[in-house]
Structures are given as C-alpha cells and as structure tokens.
Image (cartoon, rainbow, N blue to C red):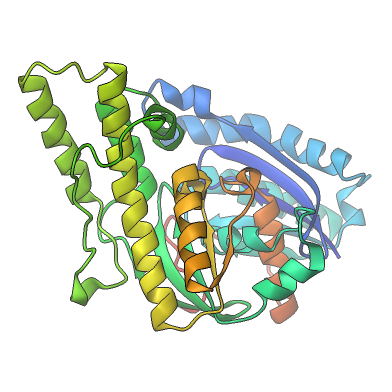
Length: 355
C-alpha cells in the first residue's frame, strides 16, 4: 500500500510517499524559516501564500523521488486537516482533494498531532520490524512537544488515545521562541537557544519549574511563569549593568532556561509513565529535536527500565512522512475512510477519541 501524504499546517510545505505505513519512499519539505525570520515568528498570511507557490513543485518532487509516474499509481492521498493555521491547511487540503478526485483515490484526512505520534513508527533503517514490534507493545505513553502543543497522551492501542494532560498556557516550543526573542538570538527559538546554551551552566540562574509538584495538575504543564521569570531576570541583570550578550552570560541564561523546560518535560513524563505502568515512552514534535531533552529523557527512562523512542531529527519537525504513517494506521482501522472528499480544515482539533 502506497500513500501520497501532504502536510501544510504551519510554515513547511511537505509531501511524501509512504509504503506499507512505515517505509519512506520520499519525504520532501520546503521550509519558510528565512521568510518568517524577519517577523520573529510565523506570519500566517505569508505562510499561506508561500504554500500556494510551493505545493505543486513539492508534490511533483515527492512523486519523482518515489518513482511514482502518476498519482493514480498510488492507493490513497492523505492530508493534514488540522490543527494548524487555517489558511495554510486550506492549501494542502485543496491540493489533496484535486489529486484524489482526479485519480479516483480515497482522501484520508489526518490529525497533525496523530502524525507526530506516528513519526516514531517510521522505518529509519536502524531497527526495522523489531523496533516497530516493540513500539506496538502497548500501553505506550507519548509526549507531544512542539511550538503549538505540549500534551501527554496514553495509547492503549493504535488510534486509541487518552489525553492525560497538556499545557495550560504556552506550549514549550512557543516559550523557546519568546525567550529567544527576549535574548535577541533569532528565530526559530529552539535551535537558537540550544546553540546559545552550549558551554553554559544550566544551574547558574535558578528559574521556576511550573506545576512541577502541583497535585491537581500532575500531568499538566505551564511555561508562562518561566517565560515571565526569564524576562524579570534579564531586566534585573541589565539594571545591574550586566552585558546580556556577553558570551558567558548569554550561554548561562540560555542553558538555565533550557534546563528548566527539560526538567519539567522529563519529570512529568516519567511520573505518568510510572503511574500508568507503560512499557514504552515516545517523544515527538519539533522540540523533540532538542539535544538536551533527548539526552535527559533517554537517561531517565533507561534508569526506569522503560523503553524509549524518539524520531530522527528529520522527522521531529513538521513533515509529510509522519502524516502518511498515521494515515496508513487509521485506514487499516477504519476502511470506510476516504469515501468523502468534503474534508474541512480545523484550526483546533483534538486527537481522535479525546474530544
């Protein structure tokens, strides 16, 4: 089974061809980072216009790299229909509708968050079938952590989700972006802070770990207080005449902030893993590319004797391969999907079954 998948939920125009739900035949991503860097964040109208320009060449390249002569040679077309920027989503959904209608193929609407989850099931060549078999050993706990989302989700089986908690304010990736802007080190904030933090002392500046010990929000997150604390800290240092851009100071500030985020993410995920006696923890989403998070999580879950999976860097940020993997699983469970081309876009959209 081969699926053409399309992803345009934010500022990446992506298309991929996935075979049998895990084998990546092609994965093409056209990023808009340079366009949005001047704004210090994603500018929605600019994003949607750029998707219009990029969508056809990206799809054509994905088909060519996969050796697919025509869309009709595939089994289905899958597309992200939410959550995300409505204008951006419309470009991908409309392109997918046209391709599916023209080729007489099923159209599979996929939740962007479910796509991130299934980035862990993609075949990267490292583990193959044995790794996927381990991933299928449910229950599995998933931490989705990105610029727009921070959620803990319990999977009791494929497509069966229970939302345990999530952010009450900013997502972790959003906090990275805002603090990077505060420190004037560029966009996107995650890579900028990680680079600035190299060589820094993560214990130099004590910053709060939001809701770390909150019994009534055990599996929820909050990063607004951390963001405000970082603002007050920089204001205090500047008032004392400290040069915030001096390399040692900047490195310590970035490292202290990064460690505060990592501590909360890992601690709460570990608590949930223990509470629900899961066999494996998966982390996914753009922030999962952060090296400090990857290292701390791998160490913690190894100590707990819990399996741990995290996608390769190429599949952490938005891509269409993950949408194809999710579509394959969802189609297997619900073969009636794809018969309706009347797919709508949704700026907000919970995981299936967690409404």
